Picture 1 (cartoon, helix red, strand yellow):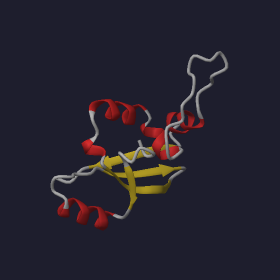
Picture 2: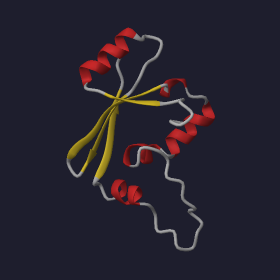
Picture 3: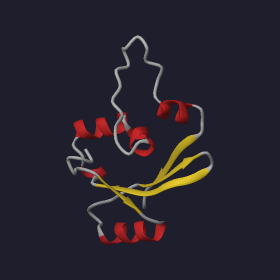
Length: 105
């Protein structure tokens, strides 16, 4: 979806996000904070997230962690006999990586 330009990651602090939300009432955006090993690695929002159609929304939700860990979906064949899971799955599953989010009310 990033390649298709349906989503655009906007790296910003809370003040920049607040300005975007206040200036774009009809284009709301969740603010995300991605932490890895206790430090903040990314913070900002995905421009266009709230306008995704249901198919693209499901895709975004399915690969949500990948978007933060790798920057895009990491397609793997989960049915492959040697599939052990991805580094992303291990990082999020083990608690080293986490994403918190909130919305403007």
